[in-house]
Image (cartoon, rainbow, N blue to C red; front, side, top):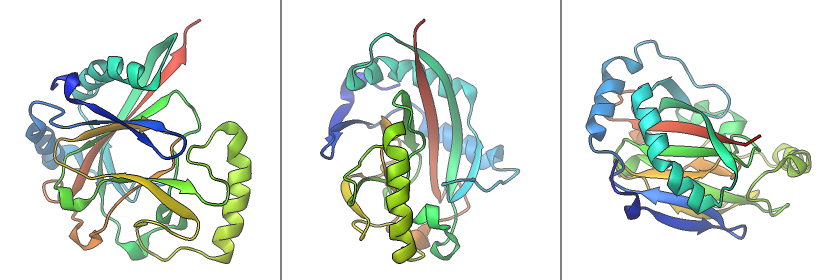
Length: 232
């Protein structure tokens, strides 16, 4: 792992959610690409829920080492106190769906959970042109993050909006009638970002024609979700 001191912390939107950005995140990112290309996607499965592509398991040693190295930085950046490091899950992820194949949920920003103690660690293992990650504000409610209290009102308003004006069959790219883009981080090979999983976000794929099912050529990322818990 590269020096944590090389990381920067941005603050996103009106809610000023921290966003950690770290370049040259691991010493040998090519080895991860080799694993993904060799056999990780040997039994291809489409991602369910929001993910517009294929998922495959990532090496446990990589996941554990990265999470332990990032733990002090996450605690500092997000002001975590009196919480213990819990479980982490990780997949290699490869965007493969053409815009015409996207479900409604895949055409709008989403959150992974409303748990404030779950964090997404996104490690780009692809060329910059294949797209980074964008963050959004829901115009009608002003929400940039979702909490348990916000979830039902948000869904009610959004469902009405989408019924009246559904988004086109395309990856979201900037502002829409329902959402305003608040921040965007560009992809870079071996760049890593960390954000709360409850933050409204979406992949930014401005060149969907460049997507490929080949892990060496496509939009390959490692997606880690790490959850902290309050100590007893």
